[in-house]
Image (cartoon, rainbow, N blue to C red; front, side, top):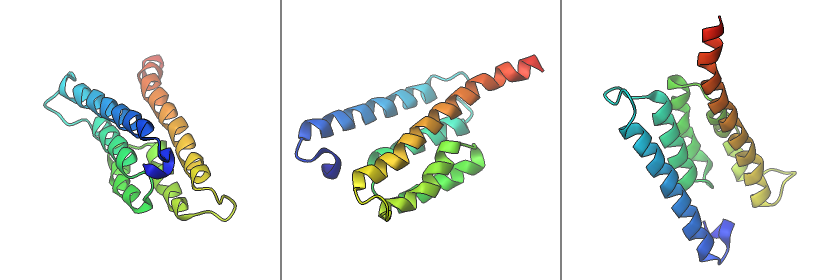
Length: 129
């Protein structure tokens, strides 16, 4: 985290606070969902994705842990992260490590939004047919 926030420890506190809130929110969703006795692959994937991104954003080999999630629940964001993660080791046309991380995580965030919208719209599509 030091590489992203520099010596500004306040940003680290905000970062880990936001991570804790997101993980707590996902945990509460898992606890209070309608069919709590069954495991939701989508929720398990979300928890593992957030946990991996929060704790290991600089090490590409940790993203290989996300590959089994693609068998349980297809996700463009997870596919993107597993394919783009080796670029964390460096790209010839991007020398700045922050620019490399932006090139990986901004499209991943956009793909998470696409995945969420696609999931929300799927029941509406099925009802129309």
